[in-house]
Length: 245
Length: 245
DNA sequence: GTATTATTGTAACACTTTGTAACAATAGAA
DNA sequence: TTCTATTGTTACAAAGTGTTACAATAATAC
Image (cartoon, rainbow over all chains, first blue to last red; front, side, top):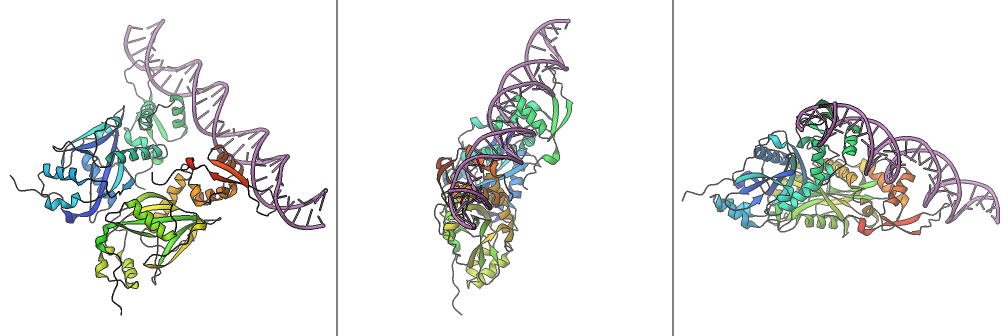
């Protein structure tokens, strides 16, 4: 057997503090989330990480999400900190360390209690090439209604993320971040419907969007189908709320 | 000189983790906040504290706010975690420790970086008897536009708290928590105006509140003044959102 | 008693927003 | 040329909002 590796040095990180990220993408039909699968354990979890001793919390999360998605410039929003004393069972983490051939003694700190600051991210589905982290061998998109059983309180974290996303959708024009630069009114409506989980009235939706003075109309898009071609739109950049301000 | 005391034992608490509370009260005219003044330092700060190693985060905050206000059953809501690497300057904390005659070596951990989870509380102004904590000799109500200069990023924390309170005011019927059990329509309107910082239309406010089906009308209140007596109202308990769920 | 004053509850009106259905325009296929 | 699916826009009713007006009324002054 090879010597056990050390990967996460205790002295580099703030102890007992972690972050988790709920990374939303929209594939044209459904709202999806990136989920990690840990090597040989059958354990699924949200992408997360730890905060270096001299690193801003926001930066740590930004870096973590960048590494998983390959994207810079990501819409990221902190939504809640989870601090129940018993939110983590150390057993699964122990399994993960063992399966990765890591030295248990020097990674003991990972089995202790963690307070986790949770963020959600909105990304353009088409641009992402998901990449597993050091401890996992799989990362994949899962629809909200087809999630695997998740570690710890990650199911709760996702539910809270979705709740916050719904509350902020219109106020912060979050639709932008889930769509390509230019999109049709129908595509925009489908994003809204995927997030709300309910159909919206086509006419009313169009009227509200147009009257909100947040869209710029561009050329039509000819899809090759036998019907009237829709206009393309983009969001007025000055109307879109920036992340983390 | 007496031997230096030890008050906060490092081993009892989660390191690098704190909480701060923005405790709102309404005195009938203005929205106010509880601010601590540290002994002989001229330093002002939000009431806060640390989390014991086996204690739920929410519980730690609840206990902290209970100690400052003397109230149980407080409306508390977590709204943001502040994790900038440089949010704290260790000097003021050093001063506070010295002025309290505390042993610097054993309290060294208090001078390190802290991530702070911020909560706001809404309380019935009349019922509170504010009590300073161990390190401070003063605690007082300050109107939002008359705050003293505050330590660290506490001014930012207050602004964010107010922003969140405004966003949640109607959706979560937060007005209840700042008023006595029974109140007049005018008093309710004054709470809203204090939070929004802007006057509201009397007739429209009344109509909206009554049509929202969230108020119960009780007997009139005769104030002894020469005009029509207003009805008293209370919120329908089943309509009021509970804290922390 | 009666008049007076300040405040409250409610109605009235215009105006805006929203829900819903309808209709004309149009890109491609038959 | 006709047909089909989808889109942009209009029309109309219903609901909601901003504003003004007015009647009701609790205490005081006379």
